[in-house]
Image (cartoon, rainbow, N blue to C red; front, top):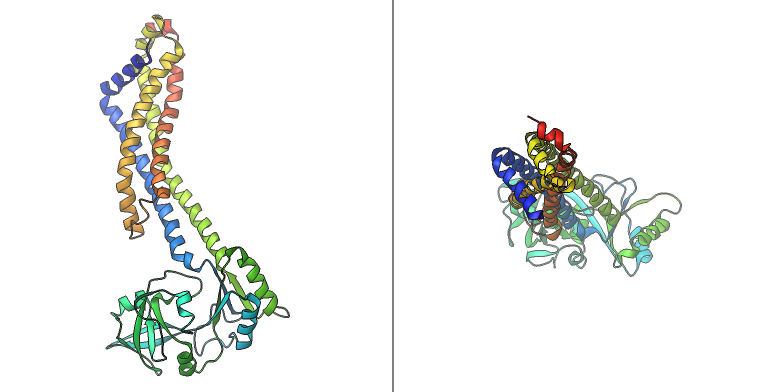
Length: 389
C-alpha cells in the first residue's frame, strides 16, 4: 500500500475526533509557547547583562585593602591610595592607562529640590577614556560638572543647569553623560563627575579612593592583575585587585544557567502535553482494535500499522508546534517587555533560535508519545482484534 494512504487514515482519525485532537493541539501550543518564551527571556537577560557590563570587561580595579570599593567618600574610610601607590601601578602596567579616581557622596540642591548623589573626581584627560558624552561637552575647567544620564533625567538637568553641593559651592552642568549601565568600577549614571583638582580642594583630600587600569590587550588582563599585586602587596596586603573580565564571565555563566533553568520549566508543560497525546493515542488504539484487525487480515504489515499512529501523532505535534512557534513571538515580546522593559533582544538570532528549538521539541515530544500506542497497535493479534467488541 502507498504511504500516502496511511497518512490519509491518520488524518481521517484526527478529523473524526476533532475535539479530542484540538485539546491535544492546544496542549502542544501552550508547551511550545512556554518553552520558547522562557528561552527568549533567559537569553535576553544574558544579553542585557552582557551589554550593560561589557564596557568594564577590559578593566582592572584597585582599591585600598581596608577601604572596600573606594570607601564611602570624604570623612569615611581613612584607607586610600597614595600618590606613591598610583605611580607604582603606572610603572607596573605601562603602557596601559592608569586612572586614579576620587569618589564620595554629597547632599546637593538643584533648583529648590534637595537630593543626594555620587561625586566622582577624575582628571579631565581621563574622562573620555571611561565615559561617553550624550550632550554638551567634556570638562575643561574646575567650575563645571558632568551629570550622569539617570541623575540628569530624575532631576531635570540640562546643559547649563546649576548644582549646589552642600558646603562646597555651585557647579554648572557642562555635559550630560551617556547612560553606562551597571559596572564594577564606577556608576556615574546616578551622580556627577567633577575635575580632580576641584575635588581635592573642596573635600581636602589628596589621596585617591580607587584606581582603574584599562587593559588594551584582554589576553594580558590576568597578567596585569598579577603584576599589580606583586608590586604593591609584596610585604603585606595593601590593595585589593579585581579583574572585571573574570567577574563578567562568572556572571554570564550564572545567568546562562538561569536561562537553561527557566527554559526547562517551560519544557515541563510540553511534557504534560506529551502525556496528553499518549493518552489520546491509547484511546484511539482501543477504539480502533477491530479496524486494525481488518487491516492486518488483508495483508497490512506491522510497520504500516505503526505508521498510521505515528502519522497521527506527527499531525497533532506539527500543527500544535507551528502554531505555538508563531504565538511564541508574541509571548516572547510580552514577557520581555514585562520583565526587562525592552524588546531589543527579541529578534536577535540567539533568541529566535529558541523558536526552532521549541517547534522541534514539540514535534519530538509528540512522536515519542505516539511510539508506545503505535507499537501496541502493530502487535495486536489480527484474529483476536477481529473478534473484539
